[in-house]
Amino acid sequence: MSKSSEKVIEVIEEYLAEGGLIWHKPYMAAAQTNAASRCEYKGINAFVTALVAGMRGYASPYWATFRQIRELGGTLKDAKGQGAPILFYKDLPDSKDGKKQFVIRHSFVFNFDLVEGVEIESLETAGDDFEKDSCAEAICSNYLEWESVRLGDSAIPCYSPVTDTVKMPVIESFVGQDEYYSTLFHELGHSTGHKSRLDRFEKTATLFESKEDYSKEELIAEITAALLCHTAGVDSEASIKNSAAYIAGWSKFIRDNSSSFVSAVNQAYKAKSLILNEA
Image (cartoon, rainbow, N blue to C red; front, side, top):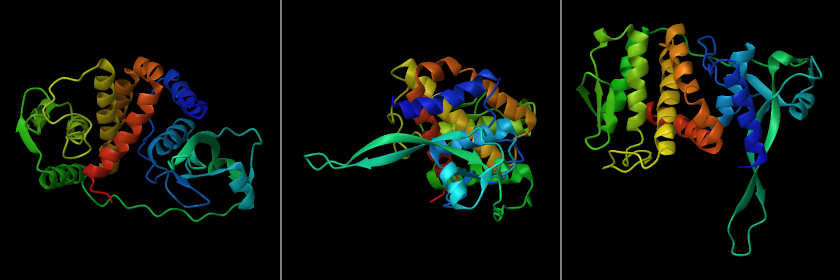
């Protein structure tokens, strides 16, 4: 793993040590965005900036490098303000056989809560003009319909790649609605790994080949669930803590297999986009 990737992992481990991975607090309605380009961060960069914003209590969804802040006419309120590391790819000259080459680099971005001297127009966010359970139901039913995933009953929530079926207990058996949808979204997250979708495991697979593969898949599903809960507005304080505790339970895997964890985060964002039918 590159030193740049290690820098990102250090930040994630720092917050794990503080007691949780809560990167999607309910007040964070806007996606974390670069202030100069107005492009939303994706994959691991979206994860890290949202994680840092949530833990430090930043209200602004905007971030920029020190150079970008200066070019926008702003300054950091505190010259020693803490930044969040993001990864980017730097192209290298093509190899002798014509193959594209690149290296992974990292840079630090600073949240605009730490910036003064720049007036920046706020992002427009959608209003909560829906019942929370209705939105969650729409996400589930739409995905199940266009991807032809079966939904069945079971005493234990699970996903079967052999029959491409998500099985769930009745909603009354859960502590509350939020916990029910968090569990359902978790199993839908698994279903995105089917060979006809994101192809994370073989269509006929019933067992994972290694503990690492199993651990990575569980993280993908739980991070996907957390992202979808936030999208639907069903991330109560209880469900957020449950999700954070679940992910923190894999902390040893994350520390020992940091590159796989970075991959799991990126896969979770792809799974979320597939379930929401985002382009």
